[in-house]
Amino acid sequence: METANATTLHSLTSDNLADIQRLTGGQFSSAIEALLKKTTGNTRDLNELEESWENAVKLAMAHQPDRVADVVHIVSERLVDIKKYRAAAELLEGIDANKEAIDVYMIGDEWELA
Image (cartoon, rainbow, N blue to C red; front, side, top):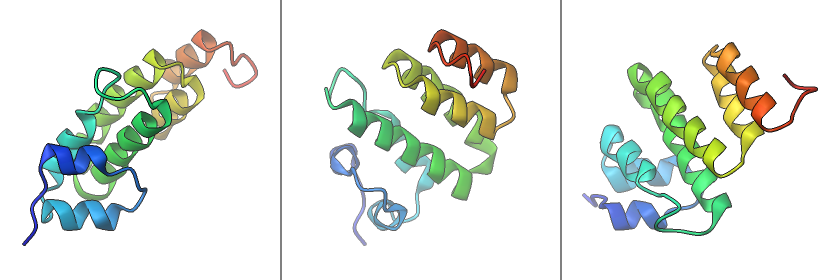
């Protein structure tokens, strides 16, 4: 069975969660951690970062429901750091963290959505 390492998952940018599952041998917690290791320190592609972090959220939602809130908070903070305010707020709304979502919309001058 093929197992993932951080480098393999770091380079995975597709939105295909089946590929992530295959690479991790079903070790979803490890896959989430590997996807969250992508930072502005190791890639300058902000869209790639957003995609990787959102894949971490999707994995948590599908396979680690007890981690969803924590992963969403980590990812939303990072999205705010890279000025992806709407994406961050939408993730927060998805876990009913509405006050935090409103705050993010306001930070991003998305007044009509706040």
